[in-house]
Length: 258
Image 1 (cartoon, one colour):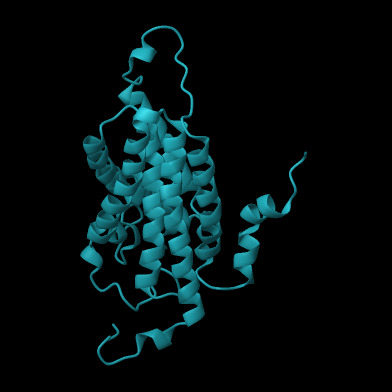
Image 2 (cartoon, one colour; image 1 turned 90 degrees about the vertical axis):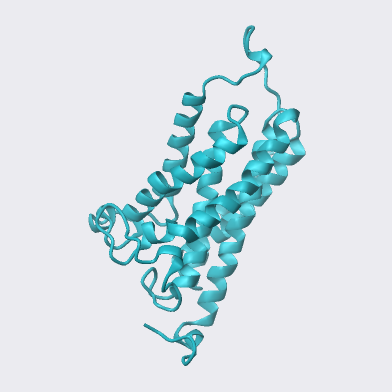
């Protein structure tokens, strides 16, 4: 255990690695309002503001959940194969140790992984688009982060997780982020049922996006944040980050057919 009062904890790690991962985490944060803008633009005008609000509230709620027990349930040091521990409840002793990544102090690793948790929760809320009220949606999000996301992330990314011990390699969240949020959004939409709107009562409703500008702007935010989403996942500033940023770079560098 390091003492922050008597030791230079920063000197234990490469500063370039820490700065890059923190910048990458900030880029991932930009993706969250990007999702909100995308959802808002694709919805009808009367629902646009509520979807923007939901994306920003997801940041607030998941930030608290991650601090409260989310990080400990996912990356707790005394975890079982299926669920983390509460040894690091409220980020207790999360500072300069390197339990999460060998190249980073736990506090930086916690910051970056917290952004992953936020964007996952925001994606999942898309299933409630024009179907659920905002208050109950936030209650459900807190519960979902605790009983779905944290265990899935723990299985994959915690060294003690059962998928990790089997040799599963999930670099940037294909399972914990995309699959868990996608399937959960589908289940959420099915449980909520059809949109409560007069347009759904007669014939096939026609839902038209109310703002192409919001859709494009949200897509740009997601695209830009993707460089941090992939790049920061390696835990250091290296050539591997450039290689792992291949997918977003391909869309930038390869010309589209006319």
